Image 1 (cartoon, rainbow, N blue to C red):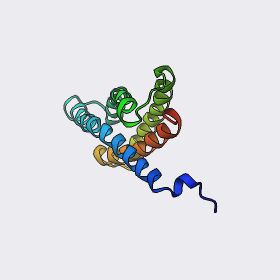
Image 2: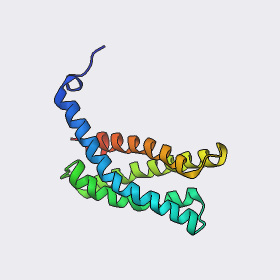
Image 3: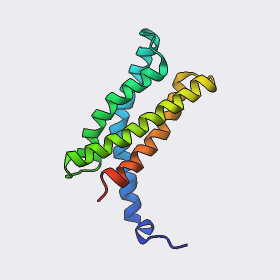
Length: 138
Protein backbone atom coordinates (compact mmCIF):
# COMPACT_ATOMS: atom_id res chain seq x y z
CA UNK A 1 0.00 0.00 0.00
CA UNK A 2 1.36 3.41 -0.98
CA UNK A 3 0.66 5.92 1.75
CA UNK A 4 1.03 9.52 0.57
CA UNK A 5 4.11 11.10 2.20
CA UNK A 6 2.08 13.81 3.93
CA UNK A 7 0.17 11.13 5.90
CA UNK A 8 3.44 9.75 7.27
CA UNK A 9 4.64 13.12 8.54
CA UNK A 10 4.34 13.85 12.25
CA UNK A 11 3.78 17.52 11.45
CA UNK A 12 0.78 16.60 9.26
CA UNK A 13 -0.86 14.73 12.15
CA UNK A 14 -0.04 17.48 14.68
CA UNK A 15 -1.60 20.08 12.37
CA UNK A 16 -4.67 17.89 11.78
CA UNK A 17 -5.27 17.32 15.51
CA UNK A 18 -4.64 20.98 16.30
CA UNK A 19 -7.13 22.06 13.66
CA UNK A 20 -9.68 19.48 14.80
CA UNK A 21 -9.27 20.70 18.41
CA UNK A 22 -9.84 24.30 17.28
CA UNK A 23 -12.90 23.26 15.26
CA UNK A 24 -14.24 21.38 18.30
CA UNK A 25 -13.56 24.35 20.59
CA UNK A 26 -15.44 26.73 18.30
CA UNK A 27 -18.28 24.24 18.11
CA UNK A 28 -18.33 23.49 21.85
CA UNK A 29 -19.63 26.92 22.83
CA UNK A 30 -22.41 26.73 20.30
CA UNK A 31 -23.17 23.12 21.21
CA UNK A 32 -23.85 24.22 24.79
CA UNK A 33 -26.25 26.89 23.50
CA UNK A 34 -27.77 24.38 21.04
CA UNK A 35 -28.52 21.88 23.83
CA UNK A 36 -29.82 24.61 26.14
CA UNK A 37 -32.13 25.92 23.42
CA UNK A 38 -33.21 22.40 22.56
CA UNK A 39 -34.19 21.65 26.16
CA UNK A 40 -36.04 24.96 26.58
CA UNK A 41 -37.87 24.63 23.27
CA UNK A 42 -38.93 21.04 23.99
CA UNK A 43 -39.61 21.22 27.74
CA UNK A 44 -40.93 24.78 28.09
CA UNK A 45 -42.32 25.69 24.67
CA UNK A 46 -43.58 22.21 23.77
CA UNK A 47 -41.95 22.24 20.34
CA UNK A 48 -41.27 18.89 18.67
CA UNK A 49 -37.66 17.82 19.40
CA UNK A 50 -36.74 17.33 15.73
CA UNK A 51 -37.92 20.86 14.82
CA UNK A 52 -36.32 22.40 17.92
CA UNK A 53 -33.02 20.72 17.07
CA UNK A 54 -33.24 21.88 13.47
CA UNK A 55 -33.90 25.52 14.39
CA UNK A 56 -31.04 25.78 16.83
CA UNK A 57 -28.74 23.98 14.37
CA UNK A 58 -29.34 26.69 11.75
CA UNK A 59 -28.51 29.46 14.20
CA UNK A 60 -25.29 27.67 15.12
CA UNK A 61 -24.17 27.33 11.51
CA UNK A 62 -24.10 31.11 11.11
CA UNK A 63 -22.01 31.65 14.24
CA UNK A 64 -19.69 28.75 13.44
CA UNK A 65 -18.96 29.98 9.91
CA UNK A 66 -17.47 33.23 11.14
CA UNK A 67 -15.45 31.65 13.92
CA UNK A 68 -14.12 28.80 11.77
CA UNK A 69 -13.28 31.12 8.88
CA UNK A 70 -11.24 33.35 11.15
CA UNK A 71 -9.76 31.06 13.80
CA UNK A 72 -9.83 27.38 12.84
CA UNK A 73 -8.89 27.56 9.17
CA UNK A 74 -7.45 31.12 9.14
CA UNK A 75 -8.84 31.59 5.68
CA UNK A 76 -8.25 34.54 3.39
CA UNK A 77 -10.43 33.18 0.61
CA UNK A 78 -13.36 35.35 -0.51
CA UNK A 79 -16.52 34.88 1.57
CA UNK A 80 -18.54 34.42 -1.60
CA UNK A 81 -16.60 31.19 -2.22
CA UNK A 82 -16.21 29.88 1.32
CA UNK A 83 -19.65 30.83 2.64
CA UNK A 84 -21.42 28.95 -0.15
CA UNK A 85 -19.36 25.82 0.47
CA UNK A 86 -19.64 26.09 4.27
CA UNK A 87 -23.42 26.42 4.17
CA UNK A 88 -23.76 23.60 1.62
CA UNK A 89 -21.87 21.37 4.06
CA UNK A 90 -23.93 22.75 6.96
CA UNK A 91 -27.15 22.00 5.04
CA UNK A 92 -25.99 18.42 4.54
CA UNK A 93 -25.14 18.29 8.25
CA UNK A 94 -28.57 19.69 9.07
CA UNK A 95 -30.25 16.96 7.02
CA UNK A 96 -28.04 14.34 8.64
CA UNK A 97 -28.85 15.73 12.10
CA UNK A 98 -32.59 15.73 11.36
CA UNK A 99 -32.51 12.22 9.94
CA UNK A 100 -30.61 10.83 12.92
CA UNK A 101 -32.96 12.61 15.36
CA UNK A 102 -36.04 11.41 13.47
CA UNK A 103 -34.93 7.78 13.33
CA UNK A 104 -33.66 7.69 16.92
CA UNK A 105 -36.77 9.32 18.39
CA UNK A 106 -39.55 7.99 16.17
CA UNK A 107 -38.30 4.52 15.25
CA UNK A 108 -35.89 3.55 18.04
CA UNK A 109 -37.96 5.34 20.70
CA UNK A 110 -34.87 6.95 22.25
CA UNK A 111 -35.04 10.05 24.41
CA UNK A 112 -34.16 13.20 22.47
CA UNK A 113 -30.97 14.02 24.43
CA UNK A 114 -29.04 10.77 23.74
CA UNK A 115 -30.32 11.02 20.17
CA UNK A 116 -28.88 14.52 19.89
CA UNK A 117 -25.53 13.38 21.33
CA UNK A 118 -25.20 10.72 18.63
CA UNK A 119 -26.28 13.20 15.94
CA UNK A 120 -23.79 15.79 17.22
CA UNK A 121 -20.88 13.35 16.99
CA UNK A 122 -21.70 12.22 13.47
CA UNK A 123 -22.32 15.77 12.20
CA UNK A 124 -19.12 17.03 13.87
CA UNK A 125 -17.00 14.53 11.92
CA UNK A 126 -18.86 15.27 8.68
CA UNK A 127 -18.53 19.05 9.08
CA UNK A 128 -14.87 19.03 10.06
CA UNK A 129 -13.57 16.77 7.30
CA UNK A 130 -15.83 18.22 4.59
CA UNK A 131 -14.88 21.81 5.46
CA UNK A 132 -11.21 20.93 5.78
CA UNK A 133 -11.06 19.16 2.44
CA UNK A 134 -13.42 21.36 0.40
CA UNK A 135 -14.37 24.75 1.90
CA UNK A 136 -11.03 25.83 3.33
CA UNK A 137 -8.63 23.56 1.41
CA UNK A 138 -5.27 25.07 0.59
